[in-house]
Amino acid sequence: MAKPLRHIVAVAASTLSQSVLASPVDLSNALPNFFGAGVGSTTEYAGGNNRIVGAVPGMRYVTSGGHLFEWYGTYAQYNFGSLTGFQWGPALALRLGRNDVDDPVVAQVHNVDTTLEGGGFVGYEYSHVGDVPYRLRGEITVVTNAGVVYSGARVSLNTSAWFPVHARIFIGGGLGATWVSGGFNETYYGVTAQDAAKSGLPAYTPGGGLNQITSWVAAIYQISPSWYAGAMVYYQRLMDDAANSPIVTQRGTRNQITYGVGIAYAFR
Image (cartoon, rainbow, N blue to C red):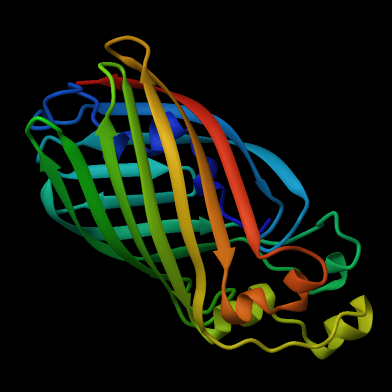
């Protein structure tokens, strides 16, 4: 499975860190710590058609020193900056491999091992307090696996916005884009001469560049002062050399949809 399950993280966990938890009408309050879990469905690998179901954990924890740790499924980051305002720190991501896939043709293309990516992020979070409170967040993340599975790096830009629409209901959405190295695309979307001979797909050597654009919408419902439930739909559109891979054009689709539901427990 090449597609990270980060995006089917319990939505009530993976998105609570950017939403309004402490009070629906007072965004100046500090967000609480929480942990949660969720279940969702995504494609078996990026660019594929077949779907899988998975479950993942999520949590948010502010240390005694005021630093923020966030862990959502296959992704974790530690913020040395402010809880609101400028944020920065290290990031880790577990990128799942592509092995034993259901598609009999893609199964003949080279396997991709699961690998750990490391790097860092920088971002900014803004909380508006007023008649119409809202919370905005933007973040750039750069990670690599130092050539263990792919060469080069992956750069992601993600933005989000959250608004309360009721005393117990919050809605959010976001946009994003990812740029990757040629080595990344060769590993996940390339078809070598040997792959072509075994699978019947044409040989293909992609370059780097824009890999995907993303968007999502989500809703969170406050069940009680400590419990939250949520749901999310996440859309990815593969771009340029990734989208033109025969793995995608002949055996899959460039339009990838992930959806999930989850529950989280918030505490101080």
